[in-house]
Length: 57
Image (cartoon, rainbow, N blue to C red; front, side):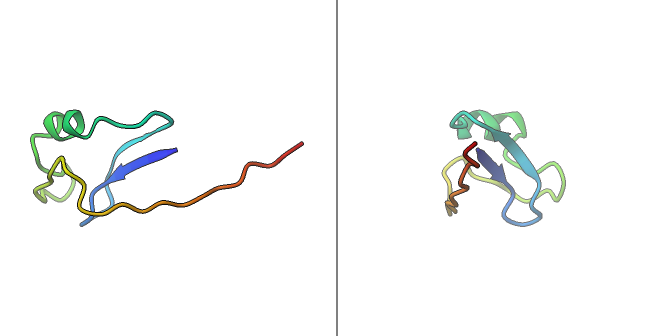
């Protein structure tokens, strides 16, 4: 799962299984976080990767 969120307040711009188009997210919110008003960029400044193992049955 991919999650794109504001680095200032944690507002979630996108959560889903497909790789997000960061420029579309940026354009849809006008370059600012709708919650805290922080300016955002469509080029990621930091990336966090975590692995979640699926339960096998």
